[in-house]
Image (cartoon, rainbow, N blue to C red; front, side, top):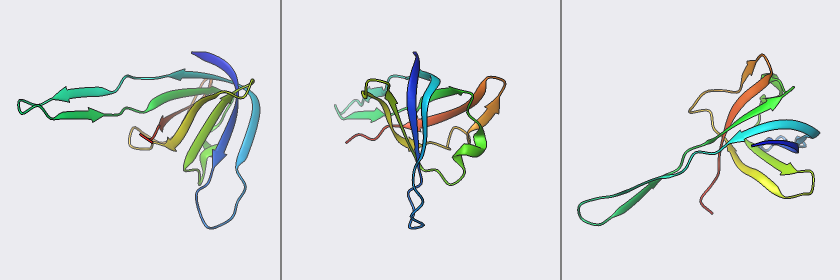
Length: 107
């Protein structure tokens, strides 16, 4: 989904740095469904997948020191709130902006 949204980049550290806020940004968010597998014994395992975000106009260096990302719609509804996931790769500059991954917690 492509939206105009507000992006909050949060540094979870003891440095006390305030979050970086970017309002009225164009983002494309792609969610991937969880993987759910049942074993022969009947145990169910669930694997979560990170959401892929393309921030049009953003830059990879905006993510220096960032651990968490919150993206809200202009009306305040939360579109995405989770940890910056670097397992799939660090935020990467591309022609249109920056691509990054966010893993939403189970809680």
